[in-house]
Image 1 (cartoon, rainbow, N blue to C red):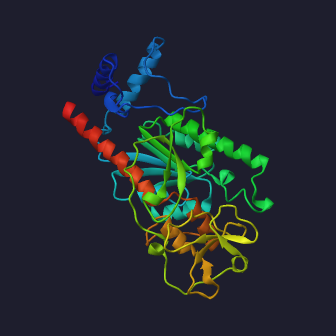
Image 2 (cartoon, one colour):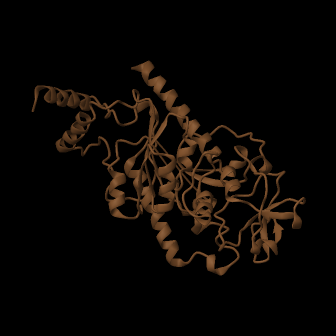
Image 3 (cartoon, rainbow, N blue to C red):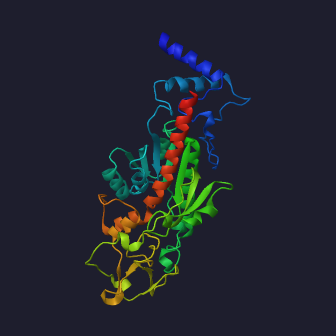
Length: 376
């Protein structure tokens, strides 16, 4: 061992003895709360405690020495983030212009992964199932390098649109088991990473599937954009400022020509979520848009824009309009067929709301950073 390495180790042991934390962890004043999740075999060790052994102290010392040359949370000019169940990159769009760097994104669908790679080349995109132990190991390997976890847990198994109307679209028992395992595995990964902040989005129905006492907020995107979209945001993060957006559907519609699909042509537009074989979901230009969903040829919950100036008084909502309602920028490039694109758009977070959440996290980070520098 070189004299320099030995000195680092000695300094680290001295710090550990005085109760200091590793530079990669949040400082003591951060009021950090760890997420509650199912216990797993790869949980991080609890710091300190009466049963802390000499071996454990050496491991802690080695962690400090290994991070000695890395910038601390105070010195680093950005928040390190990863994106789980990343989809087409909605959270990454929300992070644009903020001091947040998404280093890794994970998703199982190759089409969505390709879209993410095309638009966010600075992020390493891993295409794999988070239930796969090999993929989980890649996520766990990032422990100590993550300040923020964002994502969107697959939600179609809980969706109102999926479970009304046609029996073929209803969720079966086998899928319920698989998707509940996905939820459990994602929460276990967050618990293992133990980030300073984390925020996972899903439909409101997820609330009843969460472990007891797990923190979540129900937020409607209507305050931040032109779309009614109530979603559960699970995790530890500061509340965004109240939204006062006055935009309505027509503000994000595009000029014609338009089209109308064969199924929608003969259906009656309704505002109810109880879509049947003879109805379609009505979107009125002068109002907030209804919730954008994954609209494909096999869905009964087709969105129809009501326009009395058109023959028949209605038309299909195009995927470009749905993408704009979700907040995707004009220069965004989606990979895949029109059906693939509608699925990517409908599964994404509402980006305007996502940005409000990330803005609140960034503000808290800047405040804590300034406080730490003041007391340094």
